[in-house]
Length: 80
Image (cartoon, rainbow, N blue to C red; front, side, top):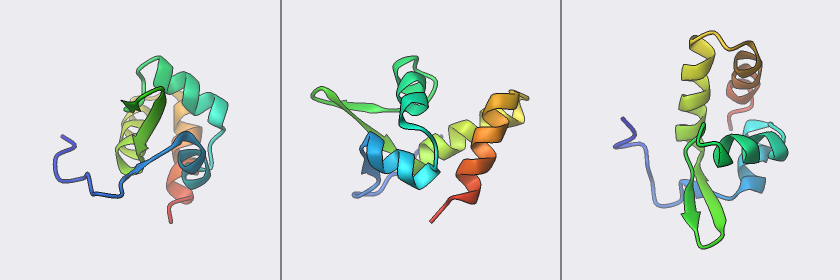
């Protein structure tokens, strides 16, 4: 599903993900730890593909989760 979406500079740290999606770092961290958003471990640090996370949040919003719908809408509106 994510094949073709990943680029050389596509992976960002939690701070950058939070800024790009305009979502709280604490919430993103909890979602990643719980395995609800995709993340790669680089040593002790997580790295995220912004578009992959955006896609997962959009899919979850489409499934009807009100909290996710609100956060996904904010993330889509904040795309750069």
